Image (cartoon, rainbow, N blue to C red; front, side, top):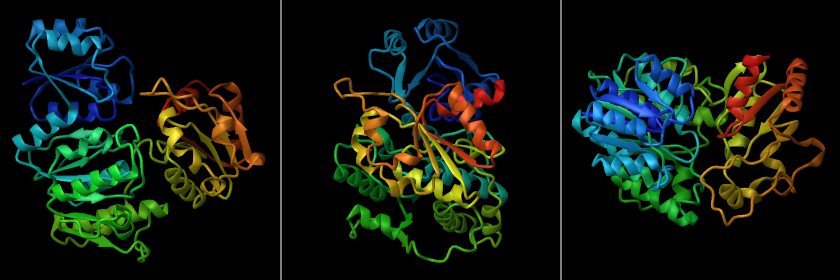
Length: 420
């Protein structure tokens, strides 16, 4: 089968393209932007074009028929490439349709990691642990890794480990053998208009899973103590001192991975040792240089958790924060309070990165978003040379600088490092 991936450089589509290639499919794709993911794909001799007009797709189809055109939820229905795919009679679908097909076709048991926060790190940690224990794993992780590809199909594997995203109700396409639920907190108002709708989707997900692991606090968040599903809920106040990874939230995620790994490995004794050797994933508290870290987090709960992790490493933490999506800022602006940012000694606040926006919504300014914050440690900034000079000054002073956001901030920091 020949599959064309639109937006192949994305953190969701890119790993799936690698999985499809490993599984024996002929893979080709397009993305208007180059990225770490496209570089990874091209190293595997997967052809990637920046032409999304539909002409590249047409040429590929004429040269060798495309069987399936896979695109992301973010792609507009009137996108020219999608229109050409339909004109050519190519089957079209979203990424989870293809992934579900691969899992069924290869007779794999799905281990799904779902939740508002911590999915990527937890998925990576479980895959790493399985690798250390010698358990073959097929998987998909929504970021690049220093220790392996973002997505992989291993013909020897019994399990497929998947970062199962709730956006666009994607995770409800699956019926996992085992689910791990990380921290829950209302998110994606463009998909779930109310907190109740968000919670209900997770209740449905638990019901579709053969068994699940989660924390009691998240069970309370769902307000469904009588969920008709098999699950194990753990007391979040239990002793986690045997886990040596930095960050309280990371240790809680690691405990769930420990329980899953014990089930998968049938009780191997070196599970904790494998977890404690986890090197992390890219864009999740990733060290880019001395005293400089990058993190994908863009929700107040994620900010608090990541600052707590940073404070375990430094007494002086500087946060450079880029809010993500104006539509999301309208929902969470009331959560930007001083306790959220207590771990930061200085804050550099950037304009919101705009993506998938509702045009009728007024774009909230940095001043509006930060009106409740302590002004003495707050600086409004832009991605420019002045900000980089400030970052460098803090680094030279021995301060830990944490750059957070899901938009352009990570790419900008890497570009600065490469050119300076």
